[in-house]
Length: 206
Image 1 (cartoon, rainbow, N blue to C red):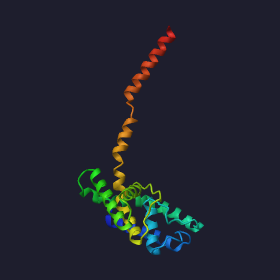
Image 2: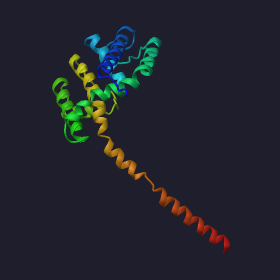
Image 3: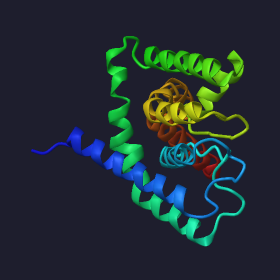
Image 4: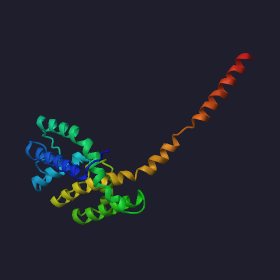
């Protein structure tokens, strides 16, 4: 019997984030020229935002991305997303098991943490911080709002790793409810078809 090693998952996560950071830092046109801030933090931020599939599009990629940059993104996506969005983020969100309340408890905690984080360090309003937290956690990532400071970008990258799977779990109740609306009983459907067939046959005989 085998199981995934947490230590190896962390090593793979570190390797993928490092490769992404190096690519965003050294390949021309990967990050907008007016991004400001520390280039290495920007590269790490873009690496993680790519690997978590949030993809804000705020400072990366720039409109001057080279073919080498596009090839790099393709390679990073195919080689890294499956592992990063699977075992890595499952492990990073395992903290939710320590918080009571089923799916809702950890989700509310993640939302509250995001609001505090982004209002305090990025100066967002409570509504904007809540919106940005949900846009990040659900990986919608519009890019209309985004962190402007080095600390904000670093915190956003780490926050995304920790909460994407948690906030995503909050979508389950709505998914279940809407799925139930789409469920049709096979027995009832077959019974109705049989009844319609009998009626059709009787009409033909008459």
